[in-house]
Image (cartoon, rainbow, N blue to C red):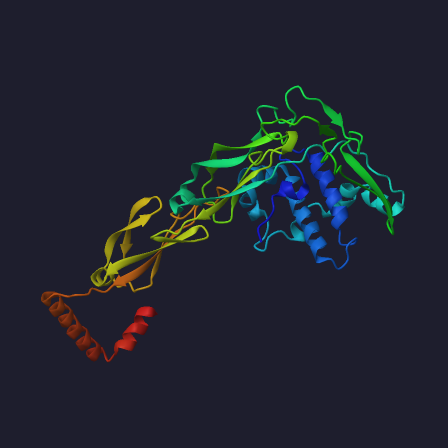
Length: 381
């Protein structure tokens, strides 16, 4: 299951300050805390998801890596199985994090927190897939992509109203953009605040909508943008382009564009983590006598020594010739597996040479009292 964007999890924009991050986490933690939702696996999963997002975004270093590389930039901070509670560094700060929130919950006071207008809705996040060759993955690359998205209407500047038209306060919410609903429960009185359904949280009604955008404040256009892909990414990683998604209606903030990486199959190499595997055919004589051979790598051709007596399946390691780590912590290796090529369509001279070689080997085995199986076991030992 793909991870959601951490900012999306906490309902924040990328530029949110630490106070907003903490406040958003408190609200989600209160809503989904297992103590409030016993035997609710979905709520527990959301509580863990919010805690993982807070763990990253509340730390300046982790947040900087995440803003640059997405989940790929911080996955090394967690174990192989992903985020666990042992990774949560704020467990001892719960009282400070939640402060009076739990106090309000059980006091029965039901103090509602005042809020300003919710404002126009944020635009939709976009998702695109970018195919990369193994060479592009290894070196990093800049790619231009054409992105069709909702952009701000130039006629009304995103307001949705015709030039010179007046707007009126919404009669349902009195221009606030929100409506409140008071309810009582075992936990006490609570106030639920939601966006006004009449004005969609904008607090105003447009009497004369813009004809260019039909009152939406946005139009669909295609733009060309450049995406910088760091070296070492892999299929499933994504690059978050903040604010490059659809613009929200009537002046709403823009969503993000998530560029997901898909690595294409290579005709020579197979990637395993940061290592790459190459199967290298050599002749019988090269394997028996040894040779210096040329080996293709992601960084060009290099020389590699094949020792005499090399058996099929032997693997040689070319250190540092693999894919770089996305965090910049060195390179993987290239693993070269020897495949012995057996000739076909022998001419008469070649056939005579192989027959003569077979006679010599048979005689040698007889003199040493060893059969074919014995020699195979020696070669593999």
